[in-house]
Image (cartoon, rainbow, N blue to C red; front, side, top):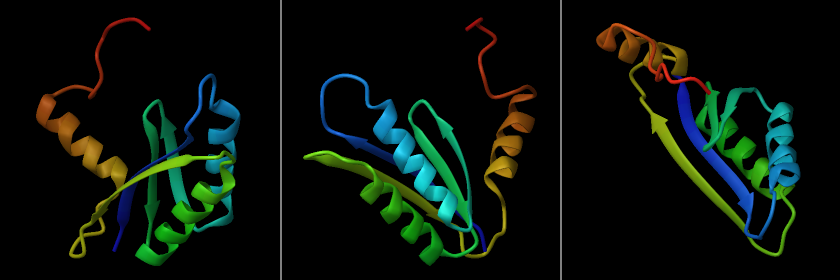
Length: 105
């Protein structure tokens, strides 16, 4: 079984949150998960739901602040081992191209 989640952890404050978010992302390295950070959060992949919850909790606790906001959305497809990459590839196959715009950054 593969469990995939979108995790977003951030202190509630004004100004840059990058240093604190980096602490949360770094905390994931202590767990048996793979992850990829994007502008809206971090996609985490684990074999077991318990490992994913533990990693999310560690990321939450690693972020310092008087108030910390955490969002966790889980896809626990219990009858499939489809990875996050395979899910994206299926969408790209249906599109007939990469799932991103061609606009220059």
